[in-house]
Length: 366
Image 1 (cartoon, rainbow, N blue to C red):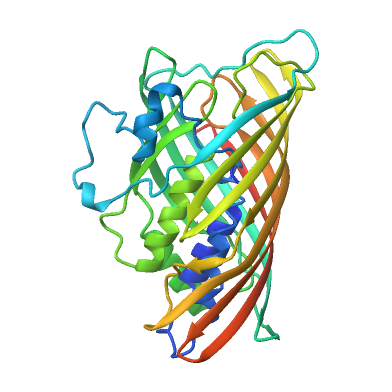
Image 2 (cartoon, one colour):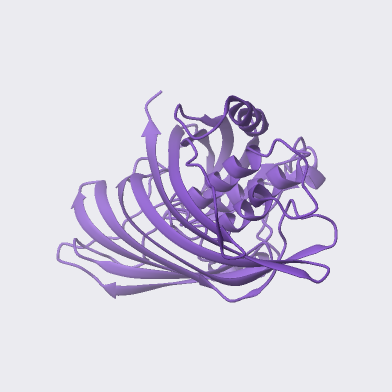
């Protein structure tokens, strides 16, 4: 599953809490929150940690330009407003151990017109230093997202084409924000409600394509967060290897992707810990790193630039899958450390952010 989710929602929350225009010096909420999108420990969600689809040989050409439409050509009303896939992830799947007998090829069984609803709740805590001085960062309340995914078509190879709707995006009750900050955050996050999109997911659980319609989003910071959210959905799932596996099987997925101008490398190690019929459990370990380089951060003042000094992230969790559903259940705990240098004219300031996050995701019955 994806390691980016907790960081994404923390970024959304921090961006949502901005209630004043940016000062001449980069405000912490604009500069520190954006890097958190980078360590998409998408515990997820992506809230998961799963990589996007491993391109098949027949998909090689389309993967190079972001993937085919995969929908028979009925594009969104405004392609210009669609938050399309801004990267072409590269990844490889390697089976490390096949596990005990009996073994089988695990494949999802998609059904046309079936709708699976997902609830994802993210809690986080953060410590930040700016110029060597500790910054006061209140613990934000949890963020809750409810999304509905409906299978519109199942192709001959078992791939499902789904529609996606964000039904609810908001804050859970809790301390950490003033009434003004909470109202501002709720207002910004409400812009994402009812947002629609689509994706494709193959029978092994790899998401091949995600598009979210951002035509009604005007806030540049929210657009950046939406792009990260798209990647979260793009990497959410419980992916299986091609080979037959049994309990105790281990496999590894390495993913290379790009966020905000930074190239990330993520290694996800999976272990099939239980299997009964169409249901089972998977243990997950995640590692994510990125080299230094220039970043494209929203919210920076004119003339300011940002450079990633270093980033590392890790995560662990457990996923429960049901081959009759297109979404898993589980939780992932993540940790990350991001160091960013912001420059404006001759002034340079380094910020270090340490973050712990927990994302819990589960199918809803209604």
